Length: 188
Image 1 (spheres, one colour):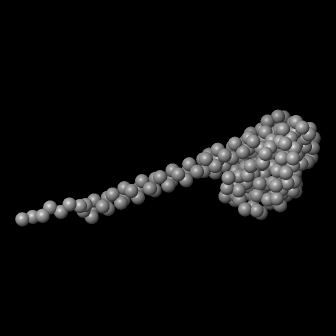
Image 2 (tube, rainbow, N blue to C red):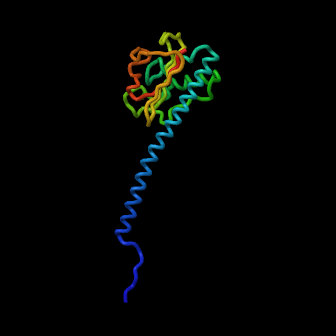
Image 3 (cartoon, rainbow, N blue to C red):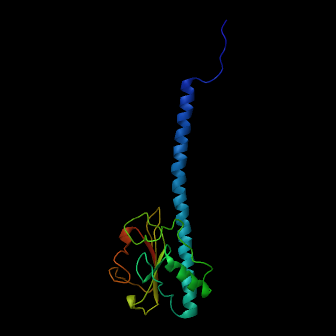
């Protein structure tokens, strides 16, 4: 007499384990891409909010807020990963232009800059015109620079057309869309 054994064979178990492994791998791959896209969506919202705050400041004061001295870039910038952002934030909050300036969702550590060839550096940076670029006066032009994780880089301009040289001392030779940074620029 033969007993019926119930259960799975070793081959059946291995097939199930392989299928589960493939599904987990696909899920992790898709999840990582979704996280990057979600952070990019947050960045775009942040940049729009910063731009609105800059305009509110301009309406009240007749000029954009002055640069606050980034240690990661140079004195003509404010960067979200050093103390210059806190200074700019306090200035903007004091002017009732914004509740708090947002920072990049991954915000790189202090001392690194979005304005480099290192594509893993994530932060926001703002330059406010300290000279007479693009035919505008001092405080009449600003540039916000950021880096997206996925998708193409963006370049948006509002106001007067401008061919801003990127090799000037205050803007810095490292600002270049060739480095994968996106920008938002307004010229009055």
